[in-house]
Image (tube, rainbow, N blue to C red):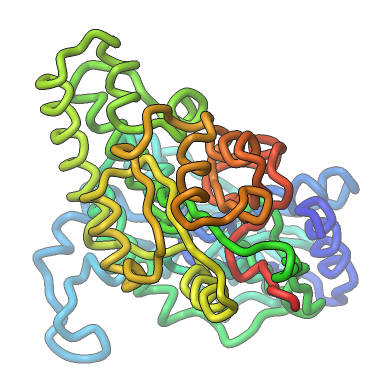
Length: 438
């Protein structure tokens, strides 16, 4: 079901509720996508000319300057013992005010309050009056017990963190993103997440959310016939390791330090799939001396490694697929632009380094992807005809490389859109989308 269809389904279910006023909570962890779905629901209600009012719990935040002092106060007893008041997100909000407004609207009365202004970090001096309405849409992780109907946006913690790192790559260090979310927002959601909801939307894949309750939707599996192939060749960054958010940060921070403009879109469009040194030559000139290039390489790698080393994890389902392929007698190879040191660290951390029969890195080839050299070299070393090789790739140059090598390519949508990987023979969101069939 596409997002537009899910939105219409949600609105249909809201409109068959008999209670008025009806408080509808669009709930979820920070970064789950609840605000996105809340916006979509509001748009659909306007399209149908259904009157409603909207509240966001962020309108009830305390001033930004009042949050930092919360770090100096510590709970000594109770469920939060040992935590600072800053780590308990309820302390960031004027919850009494939020609950008063909700109570007014439930009673069919208008309600007036002074909203928080994100631009200034202060409470507005201009009051907002919310008129009485038969339908109230509330974007919230708070006061869920006051809602009459809930739509829960369910997204894995690690997926949320990866999205936040990519979103905030030009604003803060990944460690700050991770610490903030784990200590504060995730701590709240772990405590308040309800056991169920009227509608639950799995939003782990932004391109293809599904209604897991009450419709029980599941994404269809991609069937791969084992007898068609004899080997699987994987790219590394973004394909095995979900480390692209850290790469984005590493390049953006490195470019900032050198006065070079760089953002996620520029990196994806111009440099995805290239080796680090190839990117550095693009940035600093093809004639850059090797010694200087190596110095820049080490600087950029340190920024990236300092960010990623604490939070390495594979793309969902990778280890299971790898073990299944090996148990069926498949040869498994790696074809990557990553350095020997980097791939050894990453794959050793995952515990899968010894499962690869062959590894082809930047030091083994003359040409970068989209040239097919890396994949052809891997096929040669494992002794398998290219037509019997299955390639897994996340970037357009990588997909083009595998296709040019005469192999079947599975595009994995960790960093790109389906349109970006249109050359791939098959597309998956993660490895749990695959079903190996005899």
